[in-house]
Length: 157
Image 1 (cartoon, rainbow, N blue to C red):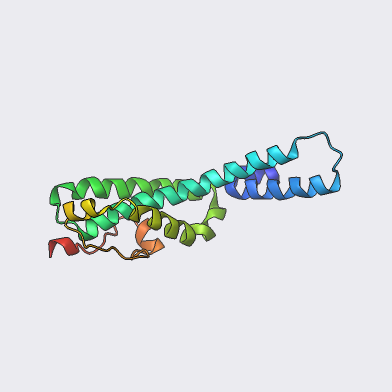
Image 2 (image 1 turned 90 degrees about the vertical axis):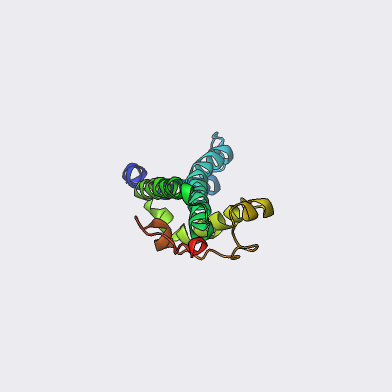
């Protein structure tokens, strides 16, 4: 069973294995295994997938914000290509670890917060963007993950 979960939901497998090792540690504290460090390594594998999800949402948010607000036309295709690439990578990640799906909202929020740090005052002026970007993502999960969905191009109106 565990092998099947490993093959179908890596993140779920890391969570399950960590829980089982913790129970084993309590049950058989005399085992000569470095369970604490094994647990840390397994947990870090799962955190890596979650971190990757947040990072991909960060890139999507950066480029959707630029598309939404910027008046720079010559970069539009580059930004769209970046979003398309990240959408594809998230889709692959979710196929590999479907138990990450309930974490999408949190990952989008974290990624958006990280994206905001990308926009210094200088960058906002350079891109002709508003002085203050929204504090939370104006884009929903579906917006970020739906192929060929693009924000309204406010910077060009």
